[in-house]
Image (cartoon, rainbow, N blue to C red; front, side, top):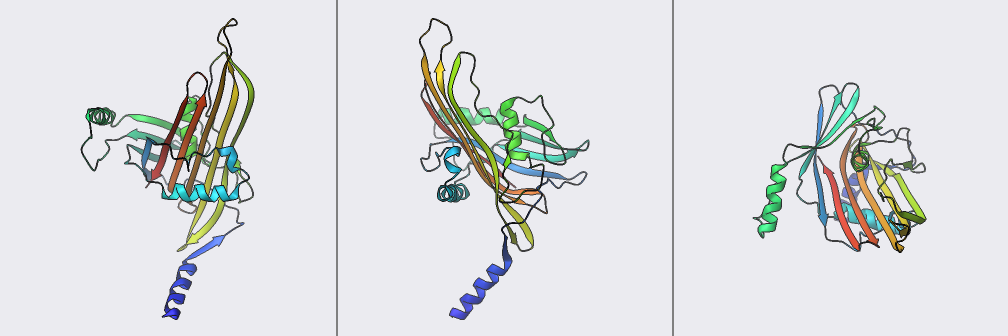
Length: 278
């Protein structure tokens, strides 16, 4: 009996090989006329203290990083309310995200929920995001609004150069925007992507990728020279984990948690989940 279990374990290990220090090139792999589609979930969720981790806190804490990755893998994904489509368009990779009518397992619990569902259904077919990427995975649309630019880059951008676990790359995102009248006292941020490792499963190379993004801003707000100073603190964090098929050139899965906390003109705390699934 023990020999049987040992043989089974060896077969599993034979099907999964880890390439720890390999350099890999991450690219979308789309032939002319081919289209990739993903279900996209974007939904505010109750704040989970285990996921309410600031990106800056993850930089030098490998144990916390492993915990967050485990939780991102196992977090419950809400029903999709968007669809992502990728095609070749004029020598570029065109990425769009369209609203769809969600499918529900149960009727609405109250009139507010029913109204929210009707609003979502009325948006079906509308293009919510649209961007064009170079062969190297760089967003070419400089004119896109910052919030849209953030999502396009988080979902679809790729590192320009080959990467290894020892070579994190910068993500082109800016999460915090504050209007005039804000006097900054401190500002820190991190916006890095990490190739955690490369596994080979049944002949398919799969890159495990972690995004660590955090912005921490403190200061005070004074809209008029005669007004009193109002202290403000804002912490925004996006932490994502995904698996990318290197040879196929497409996401196997991608899950991100966005966490916001702030004090000052308003006290707020919120958490949003973003997920791509084939």
